[in-house]
Image (cartoon, rainbow, N blue to C red):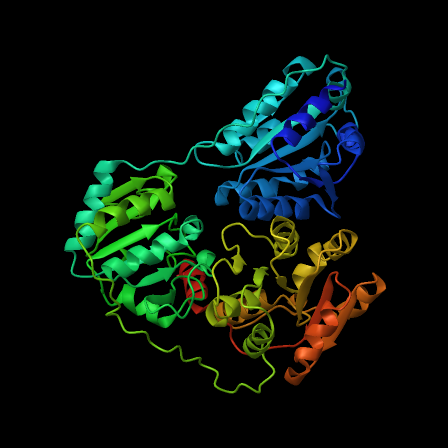
Length: 546
């Protein structure tokens, strides 16, 4: 059999259902073998960059290995951004890139590139296979590295001649048995003592807690700690929980900010956040000031980066919190909610104005509470973080770590493939759409019922507002020629609608968009001159010129 078949047999036996990418000469051998492997479906995208974000979203929500493929040269470099994102989000993705035949290395072959060193800085492991006898062994090693320890992306470059080499039938190893990180019991005991003996404290939740939402809530209720989240973790905790005080960081909430900045709490318990710029309001020093700081994470490299940690706990969030809860329960029996729930007061009380805040609110009222919103990069993202309600866990996918414009579109497709029964709505903008909007065709080709909401203001909105706030002027090139995106969707044979006023958002509109059972585009033609809730970001950027 061909050597590449052993790789695909290994992936099939490991439960891989999809490979994301684009066929091309240096990976055609791999795609050709998929004809005979119906268990694996190739998701052929319109751009490799979009494929990498689809793979990331699929890995996150399927809780399994994702596979992404690019050809040699530019196909491989187009995947690098997605690999860097997966590294930041701890997502296990196997990136496979083609390569020119080994014997042509150094001869300026078409699309020749040594991809291995390029991927080394953005993956846990990067290798080039130079003979077929080492191919399966290298893939097995890469997958084990991706899934074990701190999960993350890996990369293997496979020359076309290596893929095509004939080898004897190989015994296919089993996928690695993934073990969760058990916490150190001594650290658990110290944490329990602190949480029980404290006068008060704050629980700060990041996206690393996405598999431990129930445990977060149970512990918070036992020790009566208010909860705040990072922007990336919006969607984990329901807004109506009495202990939830909102998002801290980029586009966050006043109540969460007051808790941090006005000195509430003897203890800060950070769960699953690396405490980067957007999570901490530009590394706000008040976060740990005069507080005992506990940080729980599977990645010990996040400790003491910017803030000195009093008690680091290395371990999976669910296992660690379960261990803490078991010990707390032996000493605390009263579940209580002494912390009052404040009603959120939105700054814009005019619910009839056709603006971004009201459009998002009107749409959410008409969609199921469990709908997942994959949110792209743009001024609308700050409105989503600040104003949209979390009505059920795991309902927002917001990537302020390494999300690029257009990535919310690919994320919607990966999410829908991972959880077909969940409603998925992508919130994107015209600038993002012009980068990866062709992936709505991918959604059509695979009959994925996703609603793509395009906020079309004919400009790069976040750039426009950011420059006006920071420099009191904005270059005319940030504004663009208006384009009828719904007409583009119609040309693709995709159901679409274009709205220009708030009362166009009604149950009949949602019913119309869903009627085909496939993707639909809702274009919101809206130039919102209101300043998005992102002032702290602008203040931070402005500080460098002083």
